[in-house]
Length: 299
Image 1 (cartoon, rainbow, N blue to C red):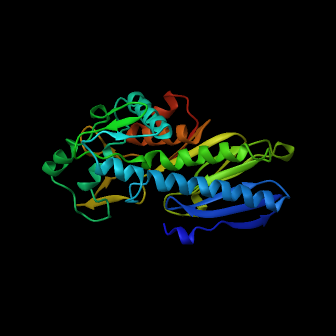
Image 2 (image 1 turned 180 degrees about the vertical axis):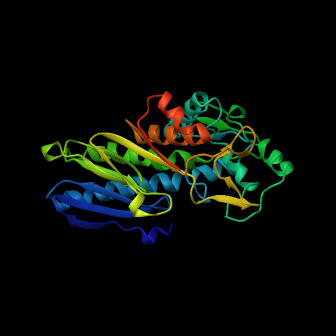
Image 3 (image 1 turned 90 degrees about the horizontal axis):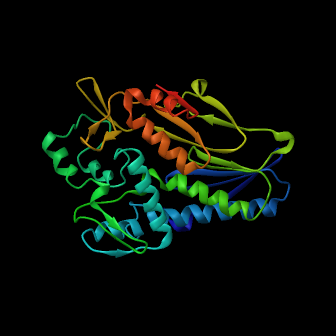
């Protein structure tokens, strides 16, 4: 994103203000209940600066990011900071908890799967060629260093936006006790108790963008995150190939929901659980029910 176009807009609404900006390929918003416009503007700037910082540091689309540097130096030991180590630790926990299904090295499979709506289904040979560079168990890291096999890549896309939401909540809560909601492209978290203990009304957009089929959720605390399968796919001989891949086989999971939204105490946890559910394919809803996880599913 061109840094010259990075602006934060402030709009008054009943009971407070809405701050909006663009980051991580998403419309981002902070809704705060306050009559102090100067505070609202400052809160918006705090949220935006943190989102842009994380995007600059961890986006694989930015050739100057740390993520790109790590990928370009695959096969070499690279120095990392505490924040990156903590993200790797969370990724490692996700990998273990999912029995290898959630793997931040799996993004390289996109080289075999374009998921552009065409019928360009890859050959088994090309998928197998990409699979040799997938596997979190092939990396090694410590508190200040990281190394992976030459040809491998990491992708923070499954964690970055949700992590940014949690960071924004933390930073804003250090500035004010006013109740607020942070929403980054549909992944969101709330903080504080609103007047009369009123909940936030959160809309879960239907994957077809049909507003009449969207779901309204009430939220007083915690976070929700959504993972979807609506817009990225291949279609060949009337068979739809989902972009949700089984990282062990390199091929799409069978019949995942179009959208899964999960509630959790933190947004990064909700995001992981939503993605993990999608990976279960046809068993997504049963998986979440067995774990007693509050969720909303759209098929």
